[in-house]
Length: 198
Image (tube, rainbow, N blue to C red):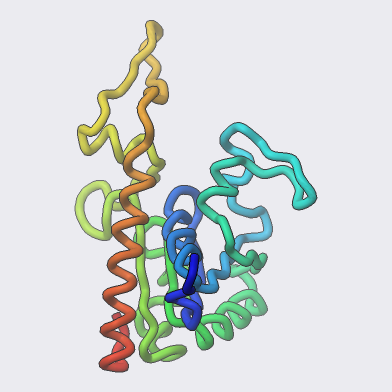
């Protein structure tokens, strides 16, 4: 890339699995993205094949793709020390990405009021499987489920009645993070011009 358009942007990434691709898109444009992982790590590292073995350990190709170029930091957000460290990171950040079920940030003590207290112009992007409202908001979600629920692909059911992953490329974990990256760019422009959070 000839010019790093987002070289002055710092992102704190609290996502797991597919929503992590959002931070990868921002890295591609030069942003510094710090992925915060629990002590047990993001299980995308080992949940899909192929597993790549190199000097950094053993990680799935999907993990290497969606988390490309990110820095990684382990914090126990159930501890005071972990939450204090996250507070310091947020004070120095422009964007917080959260890719969990709705209410996750509130649950760990980083709801909207706390984030604004830490950084008045912080941009927050929450990427959940089924949105923040509605009857399915609290359901766990994964990539192929997005496609099946939206009707993009038909569920594949084997002879024993079990659903299998269809052979098509997954659209949901690609499109969702790409659209979210565009929303973050618009929110950054607004935050920088008004000084207000987005």
